[in-house]
Amino acid sequence: MRGWLAMSLGLLAVVLGAVWTLQGLNVLTDSAMSGVTVWAIVGPVVAVGGLILIVVGLRQRSRGKA
Picture 1: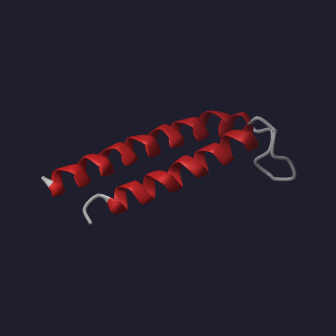
Picture 2: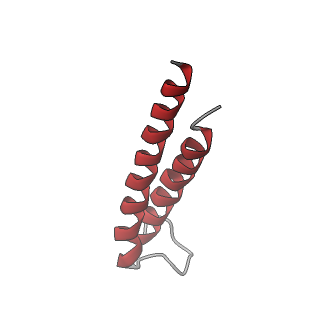
């Protein structure tokens, strides 16, 4: 069960980053974050960080099986 925490947090970060990006680009409207350029920049950064966490979690899981 190694790596599940990193993978779970990574998945959460990817989803959150995607939502923030869409809000920053004003695709998802009716929010205080809609149309704010900062979220269009922060969102992809968080999503990439989430992808890194997922990769780290996958590597931990594969090391645990060996």
